[in-house]
Image (cartoon, rainbow, N blue to C red; front, side, top):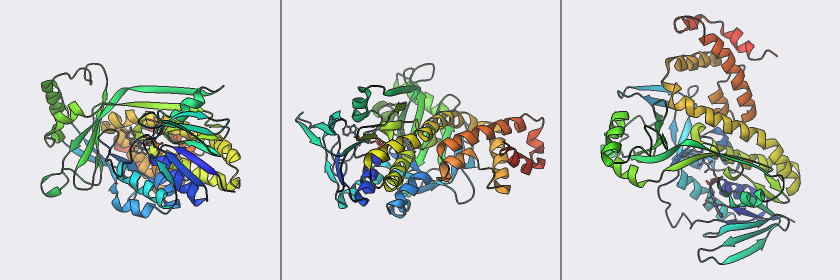
Length: 445
Ligand code: FAD
């Protein structure tokens, strides 16, 4: 008999997981704290758009959704780096034809919820999970009027995000490891409107970056010609959210620091003053499974957004769990235990890679040596594509390479490239390097 599964959270991962489970014949009930976003549009707050890449697309393809979503996404072929003078430089993400996709968070969520509902998922909106009893597989929810209800299921999945109530329940059990680490930077979304006639003010098919060493702004394109900018900025210190206290200080700082874009943002002051300042957290915990309860997505492994992989990793979770349910003939407890063992090294790896990439984005992309490093790596990859795949490509474009393997290989590549870049005059001589020898060095035992 197919199982009754409860999912806490109808976000991106909970909604996709519902579709996977429904396809396997499970009965799925979803409890979501918020009102139904299809009827109550969600306000500004957490990223309006996201970068969807191969791992996420692969999972969406498995449930037959990738073509529909590709059609509404905007391809971004590289990073467009903006310096303080407004000069720009496009750094391709990979080979010709490789790109990431800017997609609206709410549209994506709505597509997933609609599909899950059409397949038979039962949604309970404005029902906040307050308590979990893993031994009895019971979930307690509260309505906005604080009416409590308790339900029993065969399995419970906590897909309720970085501040998961299901995880909080597990934290109260014995030998549950948990760590939560905040960055000293927060983020704020700033709108960049379309130019006259709905045109894009900057190159449409790129992720724009204004690297400023200790902080940065990025912008992703939206259909209709606008961009959503996100300022990643220290909470405290000389240039920080805390130090910009007057309208005059905010405006002059932004105009001086990002002159080419701020002049296109008539509402920048209003956005800065009114949009919330988000914090950036890495959450690691273990075990993810207790009795028949499982954590998935951000609830199990929230990461900082600098590799554009949080959602992609959560979607990959759904695909991996589905394969394990298949492998274990739908024995839920065996599959969720196998899942946490297989997946934990990979999500730890992407957590580390995402932290490392903040430094790359805000500082290194503007550095000549870094640009040269990328050029040399791209050349080795072009000549020996099976032997050397740059780290960014392994993570973003190669869903068959596990995150943990990408991290490991990336470290070896860095050692080799550090040696090369230490050679005198390398900027002038790099074309005559022995690329085959470099590619082979990566595979030396
Ligand atoms: P969430 O999206 O957080 O969904 C959790 C759901 O659970 C929500 O609907 C919430 O309302 C609900 N919920 C919470 N508590 C309860 C409760 N007690 N009871 C019932 N329901 C509850 N990832 C990428 O792959 N690419 C990107 O470009 C990218 N950019 C990002 C930019 C920023 C600024 C941030 C902060 C994150 C970004 N991410 C990105 C990460 C991505 O947003 C997350 O990894 C993703 O949203 C995780 O999905 P989830 O469903 O696990 O959690």
